[in-house]
Length: 466
Image 1: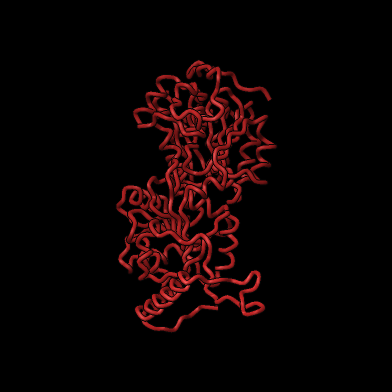
Image 2: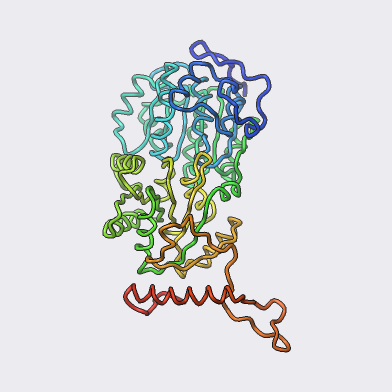
C-alpha cells in the first residue's frame, strides 16, 4: 500500500530532522522544533505551557511525520496524545462535509473529550476543524458539526458506526487513523467495531496505534492492519511499578468504608476504584455519611453528570471520585494524590491501568489496595505478578498510619511471628523460622494495638476471619 505524500497544499509538513534522536532520554534539552514541528505549532504549544517533549513524543513524532505507521507502547500519562496528535494535525487537510480526513478512535466518551480538548487549540492554530462523536451526548449537535465539515474527528466506535449507518459520516476519505488506548478497546470488546471502521478506509492511509500493552488482541490488529510499523516503546510494566509507592491493607468488612474515609481525609484528591456501577453509587453514599465529599462516575450516568463530576474533581471541589474501570479510562487529571483499589483489580493489567492515574508525566504515585480476608490469596498472587515484595498489613480505621500512607514504609518481607520450631537437640532446624527480640517486641506491640482497636470499634469479636 503506497504511503501518503510528505506535503500538502494547506498544511505543508517540514522535512524531518536529518538525524532523529534514537533515545530522547539522552537529550533532556530536546525541543519540538528539532523533532520537525513548524514554528507556528511550536509557538502554539508554548502558549499552552508545553515546551519540552516527553520521551514517547521524541520517539514517535519523527517517523509519524515521515508517513510511517507507528506502534507506540507507553503507559497512561506519558504524553501519548501529543505523540499522535501533532503529526495528525500536520498531516491533515481541509475536508468535505461528512467526510473527515483524519480519525481518532478512543474507547470512552471521557477520553474523547480529553483528546479533543488537548488538540483543539493546536488544530485551530492550523485552521483545522475538530470535533468529537460519542454516546450520551446530543446526536443532533454532532450531525450539525459533521454537515458543516470536520477535518479531524475524535470518536468512540459505537457512536461512529451509528452515525455511519445514518449516512451522516463517511470514513472513506480518512488518510490518517489513530487507535488510542487500543488495549482498552480490546478489553471492552470494541475490536469488531474497530475492524468495521478499518475495512471501510478506501484510501491509502497512515495508522498510528498507541497502547499500554501489545498482547494478543492488539497484536492481531498490528499484524493485520499496520504496514511495516515503527515500534516506539518507552516504559515497561516494571518501570511503571517502580515509580509508585504500593500499600496493601487488610481490612474488615464492617470497617472497610471507614478505612477508605480515613485515607481520603488525609489527601487532597483521591481516586477510588470499584468493580460495579451499583457499588460505586453505594460507596459514595457511605463516604458522604462519613463526612467525605464524593461523587461517582460510571456508564449509567448522563454525560453531563460525568463531566460535572470530573470537573469538580479536577478543580479540587470534590475530594473523592469513585469510578468503575470502564469510566475511569478517560480520567486524565494531574496531581491525583492516591489511587485506592477499594475492590482489588482482576489482574495485574487492571492494577496498572488503574494505578497509572496517580503516576502521570513522570511523577511518583501512591496506590493503596484494600483487602478482605477472602481476597488475600488472589492479592498475594497479584503482588507476586507485579514483582513486589510487600506484606498485606492489617489496619483498622483508627490506625494513625492511614493518615500518612506515603510516610509509613512497610517491611519488604512479611515478618514471621510464629515461634521457631526446635530441631534436633532443641535448636532450630534447617528452614525453621527465627524471631529476633526486636520482631518479637514489635509483634507484642501490634497485638496490643489490635486489641485496643477492636475495643474502640465496639466489641472484641472479630467476624469474617478464617
